[in-house]
Length: 259
Image (cartoon, rainbow, N blue to C red; front, side, top):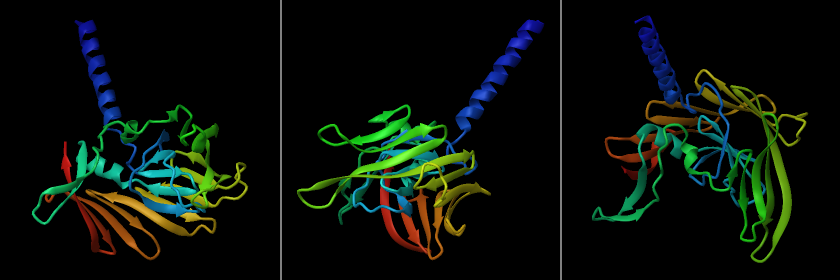
């Protein structure tokens, strides 16, 4: 009887542990969790030190909707936030004046353990990369030493017929569960940006320790704040639409439907 009771207790404990793990999220604004993806999705720019015109989705995703990508770009994937709210596959669409659907997006797949599990093309255990039609790597994000990542753009378009090779890189390092640093040098002798999680907020500071960007979630809204502006990306479940606000004024709305 004692053995049977122990087995039942052990099973219940194991169930609680599993439930706790499943309930965990990459986006609780408490800690960073690193993974790689090739997620070419709409995003809000956090840091843009790029000299090129092209965006390469060889991303280092670190949780809390933050990612780093060639070329010298940090952003927030608010479609990942939409997925967190809806907890279902969804499509976006537009309609004509008669209310009929005229443009419909691909399906954005929901994954309760990791949204970026759906974006693993050209992703390896230690890197994400983009290749051109000849199979040459044009941009990548890769682990180069423990907790340190090199993010590189190798080419840039300078004209209609000419592509000039480059090697424009920057480095990010996870200092601890709640801090990343950004540098143009792999020895991090000069820190250009610091990304920290503080009081359920993502705080971005420049090399002068000035706050340049803040992000946080409040129920069905994701807020981004700079020194001048405040943006809100909201899931309006009643009207089945995503809404974008700047300084309290709606500037864009997009209908969605769940699958």
